Amino acid sequence: MGWTAAGSGRLVLGAGGAAGMTTRSRTRLTNVRPAMTDFISVPFYDLLQENGHVPEIRKKLPPLLAGVRRSVLEIGAGTGLITTSLAEWTPAEIFALEPSAGMRAVLLSRLSSSPELLERVTVLACDALSVELDEPAEAVVMINVMYALEPDYRQRLWPVLAAQLAPAGLLVFTWRTGGPPAPRPLQELDSRQVGRHTYTVLSEILESDEEAFRARYLYRVTDGKKVISEEEITGYAYRPVWEVIQRELVSAGFTQAEGAEHLLAWRLA
Image (cartoon, rainbow, N blue to C red; front, side):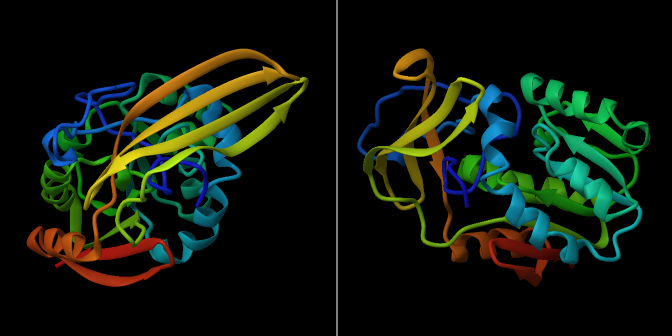
């Protein structure tokens, strides 16, 4: 599903991240995992995600939100590609959490073009572990966030989200099977033409263990064969297996509901 770190997305949670981190591995990746990593170069995000996860989510998420009318908490709103779609699918008030200032700037710019969205969408700049709504939400949506959550952070997040949900509230998030990818050399993931310039993203998997992997991303802008700019980001990502996710969510008070391909749905018990 696109070109991003865990094969699924980007980081959208708050302070304590390790964007651009180049710490060397010590015996096991589990010994050096940062809480969060952001592999995304903001200027590339909208340009490439419209070819990545967004079309699939816009097709498969709406049926899961049928019946949601009052409020939705979106963890990791990014630039608002899914936020604006949520506003189309449901009449609910939307709380869009996005701690990245760069992403949030694009999100607010997108909202400013629609007075109706400005009335219905509240943008939250806090870390996900600090979110506290005035009233419980009917649904929590987390698109392409899982890969960015270090295991301890992820385990602490589930009870926080449960506390923000109404009874029988819905939690929906993207997830992929198979554990972390194996190491592989640098390869091109996607590119887009903008006038005379080409925006290209490449990545390689440097190492991996049972849940974590270290990846290197290269964001390149070229004019023909001339390289205009290049940004390199190296960090960690996570892909927990099903048994781990199931155990954590059950412990946090959730029961599994019917989801969709690459989208898990759970309800607060």
